[in-house]
Image (cartoon, rainbow, N blue to C red):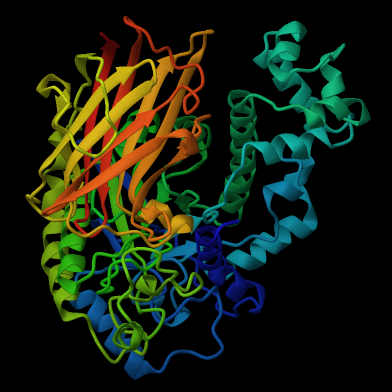
Length: 621
């Protein structure tokens, strides 16, 4: 696991650790027949509270600190009144995940459950699973503090579970062959391959004599096989759907009338997974951090598929003033003014979408004394800087107030107040919302270029140039002067760029995804048949003894980034760069006149907080 993964894991586990070592609360809520519901009115989704008032959930996670369902002692009344008074004056109405029990009576509550079970420990296809006494009683105890509350938005059933496609297959393949789960896997596989065992053997590279050999000791050959991702993903979706069906059904039995607020997925999952689990939720929830304050188009696509309202349950911006430090969330926008701009943009975009019903900021107070750390920090060199990977200093400044609650971030919360006051009006007017269509790929013929590979673009014909659009930007109207070039020769695909970027950000190779780069993706049909997609990032710096030389890396696909040769030439306000992507870098790429492929360019300017994009359906000339 890389350092970014460790950072994400720690953040995800902190609230769980509070739950693990805290006894179940003695709080017992009065039972109320009137509950919060979710409704669609004239094409727009809302929450509606027990008194009939419709609202858009504007919340903060960890209000008063990160808790489970118990705190050692109630918050002092003066602090509670101050905190709740501020949140309400800023237009917030919800104590989102992990908020202090002391504020539950004063705001709507979005509750995070951590049940005493996980899908890895259950046969979710066995109906007896959901009637086990310890399982039912453990969940009942977990929910005791919330049952029947009239101000409860609902329950989150999980938080950022990875849902690896490989694990569910391995889990059920290893079950006893006569178990319900193992038999279900065999039946699913038979249906997936339409009963054609030969098709399975070809796809898996095995020699089974029957579908039943998938499981038990007879399935040892399968254990070593590299199974197709499509099959593994489909089985993962089947397991997840049955898990949430049983889990959500049990929660509804224990607290009739409650809403199920999804499972707080870490970023947008693939559509098949969303479609599989959506029927068991009242609201779909996603933790979606981005530096641009942009509601990704995937949310609109998911709504079309599921017709379920949505909440972004974690998002934030950091104002760390020094570019180049690793950020586990990659949300550093450098100033409090930019944090405020991000808040307004992201919340306004969500409010203008009729399927959104909430935005929950992460979190109430900073993690640590980031200002002192900033004052003590030496500004890092742009190249070769080795940040303290465990600190993730930018992520210390994610709060509405400082870590000790002695400072309120006035610039940010003034914008929160202004924006939140406009949310209901924006949302009520969102019925006519239409998703902005994606810019279609242009059709281009790609010429042969006699490339010298020296960073000088003089040999590139004007006809090989393309001008990208700004696809993402936190700031309005950024000044972007970019031209990219695309050519080919028998030596490989040739790319170049004339790029305006005077501050080259590059933390280090382990965190290269937070550095400036020119991304190139190629989609094509292999010369031997079958579709292929390969993505490369060309970094202007990070290689060589001085760390100032460019290099390339393949982030996904079967490409070999080390085979790509690149040369950079500095210029005032930016640089030019050339690269050759040889056949060794993209196995199977057809390089001859008439070959067809789709090529994408994307530039990532970290300190500029913007991205560019260009797409073309090209034919080699």
